[in-house]
Structure formats: structure tokens, C-alpha cells
Length: 604
Image 1 (tube, rainbow, N blue to C red):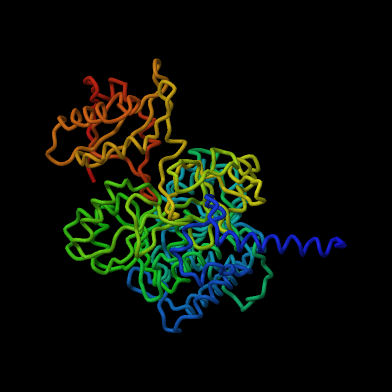
Image 2 (cartoon, rainbow, N blue to C red):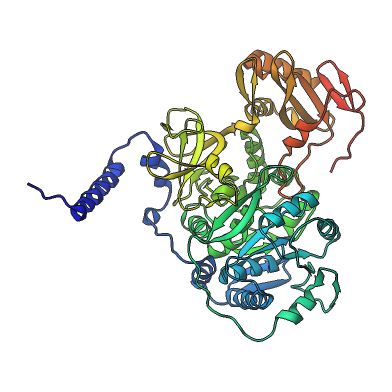
């Protein structure tokens, strides 16, 4: 008889687990969480790659140390370049200044800055000493900024010396908070260090800050851990209810590890042009993450949308992390040669299949590679999926990173839906990139992070998707962008895709409108192509009436000169459109199903 004690019980459990692992490789269960069908598209030698422990700074230095010492990893506007050792020198200076300032392990320091080298140096410096970086978008309202500062007990706030940032921060100083110092860093500090020393209340020039704190050499070892929070970014809400996403050392290491070892083509020797602003988790992927892959990152602090194709033509990057609006600009531009553009990656906002095909056709004619759609949110360290470089499928958001597991579940439950049977479910994600939680917000955390019966914590995204038999995922919409019309659900993104199939519009965005009879109805904001007439609206309406379910038929079409996009990450701003009172005859002209604003807005 087998004598079972605690030790051999553990051995039996381990054997059962190993057997289950072996069986899962041989037999398909029909469930993605076990079969992981996407792994066949990743290099087999990286399938079981171990995620290093420790802090992100040490990981960054170790991984970039694999490249030749003269490799330029960071480039500011093509005017100054930094090797790994030069980056580390800047990090050490910043770390010493933070320590002299009084920043300690676990303290939170806030930033509202443009895409400049100091953001990266300071983030890595704070990580090195075990402190936390709090990134705030520069287009936030003073009240919302103040909420984020108070949430994090911020004493030190670093900003760039540009008027629109400084004016907002001045208003913040009139509110109740714990701010002690606001340090202004010139946007061109890396190119031409400022000698201007001044103090105006709590505002302090960067030159004075350096004089006061860049003294002596107190660089010292600080013990930090993998599960320590190192970064806070924000998501959700339009006022004080923003949620602070806590990302740990382990999250960021896993993100960079995934970028490096997944089959996405972010390879050593390539270069990337980064126009993304700090304060979004995606920024760390596009900067530190790519540098860890051995990709040179060219930073552009600010730009106008209309200038984007010329910027790409000027810097000739191999990789861009962009969104639909900017990719459309490239496709329609007069630039004839994009042959250097091997990885035009798209994220942040959904790219409709018809748009992707149109963009690919134009980019291929200019010599560029196909669009690589990706997907992720701040809660999963921004990137969870991407299309493989050599097998990008139109309409798909790609396959999970090599160290990430994704499957579809019934909404807000742990009942997994089989893959490969074209059955939709909520996109859920588990693995080392999933956030620690929302800062000081357990209720919101519990809604997103759920313990499933398999013992794992899964992030519920509130997005609807389907996975095919090869592990490719197709995004079908957001629960937030769903309406119920006469008892029937309608995904607004599905309506947009049907309309864009016709190729009659420059752009469109469907939003919901409250209705007394049908509860909720779709209305579509449209931008006509140049020289197109309103007749195309009737063509679209007729097509939907004859080819789609009745709930697809919009109640109104609102003709616009342009659609709104968010200032920071250039996403289509459907929330602003939802707030418009299109039935206000003082603001809009209503003619049957067609509505026009009384005041025209100038096109970009």
C-alpha cells in the first residue's frame, strides 16, 4: 500500500501537472487556455522562456548589454544619440538627484511631459531606487490632474516648460494637494542644457533643481522586488473617477521579453520613430521595450497630424507604432517611397478590415510591408497581441505574445468558450503582463481581475472577440459600444464595418442615441469623400436596409467636415460624439434622416 504523506502528495501533484502539460501538447482540448494554438507561429525555442526576476532597470541594462557598445539605442529628433552606457550615465545622474531631493523607496513622483529623453532617464532612475513613476496626460483638466496627484500623494511634479502644460499646472496649484515643488524641464534640454535659474513659488527651473541636487556621488544600491509597483498610468473616466493602473517590475519585464521573443519582427538593428506621448502604457513598449529588442528609438516630442507622412519620410523608420488615422495619412500621402517601412504596426484603436486593405494596397505600392495590427490595454501593459511579421492577417488583431495566454469567456464569467468555432465571447487575458490592480480601488480591480476555477487570475477586457483555429483573434467590438434596440443587441463597430465595405465615405463613427420608442438607436457621423454628394447617404441607407438586420439601420446620419480624435493618442473620440445633442435645432439642421451642423469646422 502506498504510504501517502505531505511530501509524496506534492510529488504526485507535480507528476499530474507534468502529465497534463505533456498531454496538452499532444491532444487538442478545444480550449485556447490549454491548447494555445498560436504557439506554432512563435519560434519553438522561446515557447517556455523564463521571465527574469528583479527590477526593470537591471533587466534593461542586462538585455541591452548584449549589443555592441557603440549601438545607438535612443535618438532625439536625429540630433543627439545615446548608447547604453550614455543612457546609464544619465540614469545615474537622475537617480542621485532624486535621492538628494529626498525621494525614497515606494515614493511616487509625477510627470506631465512630452516625448523627451528625460522622461525615459527619470523613469529608469526612479525604478533603480525603488520609487514609482506616475504619468499624467498633458491634455487633462486641472481638476482631474489634481485628483491624480492626490491619489498618489505626490510632492514632486516634473513638467515641460510649454505654455499649455504650465497654465494647467498653475490652476492645479490653486487646488488642495500636497505638492511641494514643480520642476520645469525645457523641451530642448538634451540638445541645449538651460542655464536659467529661477524659483516662482513652487515652480523651480530645471537648472536650479540640478544645482541643488546634482552634488556628490551617492549612487547606492536599493533592494527592489519583481512585484513592486514601478509605474502608474490612467484609464477610464472623464473627471475624478480615473483609475490608476499599477504596473510592476514583473509586468514591464514580461512585456519587453514578449516583444523580443515573439515572432513580431522587432529585431536588433532596426530603427523606430516614436511619436507616442508619455502617460500611456503603450509608450513604454514603444521606447524601453523596443530598445531592449535592440531597436533604435527616434523620439519626436510633438507633431501635427498633417505632417506625419513627411516625418516618416524624413527619419525613414523601419518600425512605427501608430493608429488608424495616421496610417490613413501615410496611405494618402504624396510620398512615393516607404520601402524602409517593414513594420507599420497599428494599435490603440480598431482598424476596420476595409480600411486595412485600402492602407495595405497603398503601402505596398510604396514598397512598405503590411500593417501589423495589435491589441492590448494599460491593464495588460499595453501589448497583448500582434500579427506576426511574415503572416499578418487582415481584420485580425494577431496572436498573443509568447508569454501571454488569451481565450474567450462568457461575459464576466469563468466559463470558457471553445476556439475555432466562430463563437464570440469576452476577450480575457492571463499571464505576467496583467496589472497588479487599480491603485486604492479594490472594487474596480475586482471587476476586471477575476480568479477563475483554473486557479489563475484573468483580466476581463470588456471587449468582444473570437479566436480561429490557428490562434488568431478578431476583435468584434466593446460592450461599451453596444446598444440594445427593441431588445436586440447591436455592436456599433459591426455597423461601421458594414458601412465602410462600400468604400463611399472618408470616415464614419456610429454612436448610440436614446430613443423613446426603441430605447436606443444607432446614429452615424460621417465624413464624405472630396466632391461626393449627399446621395451616397441614401446609397448606404438602402444597402443596410437590404443586406443587414433591421437594427443596423441608423436613425440619422450626421454629415461632418471631420471627426474628433483624442489629443494625446489620436483615437477616434466617440465619447465626444455621443455627448452632442444632434436634435438641437439651434446647433444642427435636420432634414429627414440627414443632419448637418449649423457651424462648419475647418478640416485639418
